[in-house]
Figure (cartoon, rainbow, N blue to C red):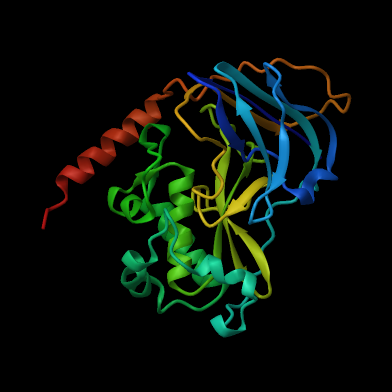
Length: 308
């Protein structure tokens, strides 16, 4: 299977501003790239690659005063298989975990294990350890939160998402990660491409997706609290403790985001023909009637709940 991935992101700065991006494909998928264009910057600036503390492929640059556009377009070979399942995968005792797993047991910017620990043990402490417990956490988060772009807020933490009961994919991932860490299961946040392959097409504009991975049975496994199903065609961009570790773009100074377009879909043209993508930019608020109904339902439910 061939999967087309790419983005067009534009920002505006008032003065030259240092900037880093976490937009490159993970190292393990570089050999799967069949053809690509970019990443490119307009106007042209020096793009310097580096690897961060978590092994992610990153770029640093000096964004000029005015407009800067970043573009990337590629075709990636994929096995076309859904996320793997191993229901026999067992939890490890903390003293037996590899040292590199330990950072994924602690609290982080968006995952407050100290605030959620008692709740987590009350909800999941009686569950069968291992895969079944992580799946129970995934089920709970999927049912607890309601998804909508209209609920996006960059400062929302896992505990706040649990109380507000709304969010976008990063909030689903953060809450699941926090619960897993509370149960002494190493969990990390993942950002990447995931198109509507093998599932009904979503009418919403495409975006990067967030999911999470847990360490069970001597390896990392993929879980997705937002969709809560095994999906085809995930292409990892970056991994970290949470979204604070792997911001798609980070400027060391003020900037205005003017364009944000993402595409990922099954590609049937191996020639990698030039294609113009007219996907709506997520910079412009996008609300369908469905999201409006969901928003109203959440508001009414919140108002109906007794206060203490």
